[in-house]
Image (tube, rainbow, N blue to C red; front, side, top):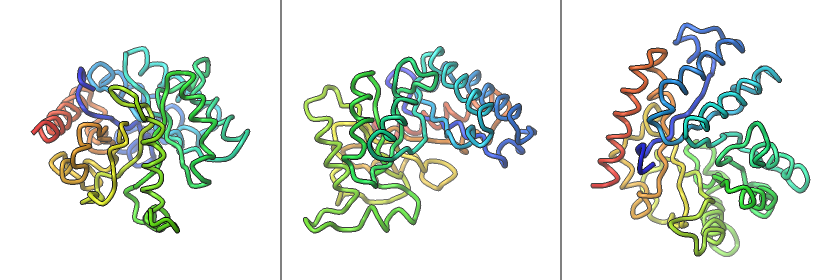
Length: 266
């Protein structure tokens, strides 16, 4: 991110976006969309976040496109955050982790989004495999969807909210790591003042919501406070709506990166 700019761009080939690009909502359309995004941006954007569901809906052929997309991003030197939000227990969680966090897997990603709401301890197989393979996790902690507060802001018997508890677990995973650990949290950029939460987890904070969801780069310091330099702002529609023109995609990504850099370094 220091080299390429502080931006994560989603790869979200959902039907309305494909249509706006003049592409069919089929495997060929998804492949053309994904290839265009990667070819346009892989040399200048630090992080890409494919949304696995938009590929998986086409079965094995869609997953094959996802595999190629991951390989193309990594070949161009970009980082891949697989947005799959996996969460389960025991051997099932271990199998999910092997799909995305084992180096010889065709879907191996630099990080995987995971859901801890079967208990943080249920993520142990993914934590272990991420450590073994030099990868990381982004754990859902304080998400931007309105429904999330029902669970994430519920208060436990010890007085901590569930979301704050997840942040505390991540801080423990990252203790002693330098310059920071590889176990991050998903924290929505649209949530406003989060000063009541300790976001200093010594790890990255994946922040969806910049762009089409209403948050701006200028909002980031107020939301994240002193932790703002560890934020990985995710922009999807704000960049992707400028396709399929490659130059327009690059211009949009560069603009967001410049705005974020100015806000974070102010």
